[in-house]
Image (cartoon, one colour):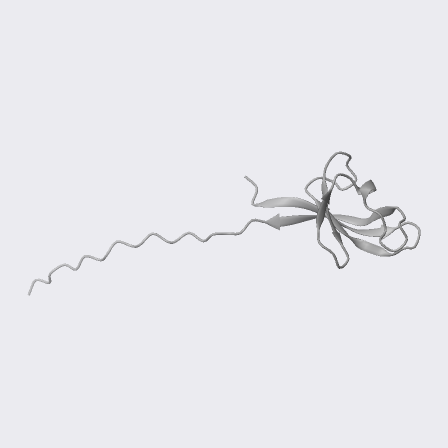
Length: 96
């Protein structure tokens, strides 16, 4: 059982003008065909795209590429378990 998920992140740049268009993230490698990726444009709302070829540069309309893709671990939220309460001490009556 893994305590984390692998997520791939990359910055998106335009081939023609070099403008940084945004970021993509995916649970599978970003350049893998058929796996949807989440595209977060600069200053816009995130959307799901089928492949990186659907994304175009907002400035010039040119094709884009993923620069510096990296693999990151995203850890699931950890829940602390409460300790079991100790048994109360039994006080023996003292013999006088």
